[in-house]
Length: 164
Image (cartoon, rainbow, N blue to C red; front, side, top):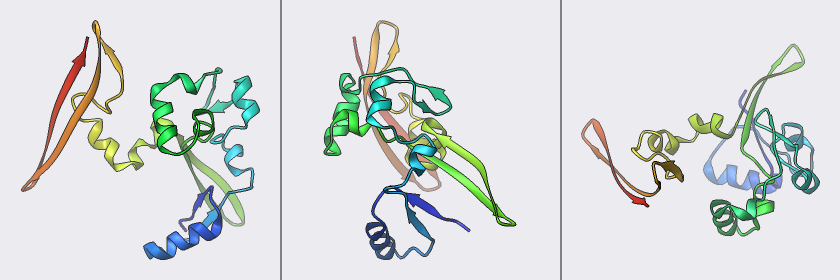
C-alpha cells in the first residue's frame, strides 16, 4: 500500500488531499523525530557544529547565507537561509511483511531527480539546470529554455549567455 508522510499539520494535509481528490493514506511527521531519524532535518546545533549526516556523507560547516542561490530561495520561501537549509529533500520506501517493517530504499539530493519531472528535461538541455558551472575562463549562467511540442516529437531550444 502506498503511503506518504509530510512535515506539516495533519489537518492541512487532509484538506489538501480532499481538495485534490486523492485517496491514499497521508500521515504527518510534524512534532516527531522521523525527519531527524532519516537525516533530512537538522537541529540548529547540528548546523552550527557541522558533522551532520546527509546523503550518506558527513557535512562540513557551511554558511548558507554566503550562497546567493540559497539566499534567493530562502527569501522566496519567506524564511532566512539557515532555516531554509535545515530541511533537506529525501524519500524512503518501506515494506510491511508478516508484521515486520523493512526499510527497503532511501534517496536524497540528486538521487531524487528521477521523481521530479522537470529535471529530466533540464538535464538534457545544453546548459543543464542553469547552475553556475565553470567552463574555461568564464562561468555559464542564465540559460533561457523554451520547450515546444510538435506532433510526436519534442523540441528543446536553448539560448545561453556566457559571463566572462
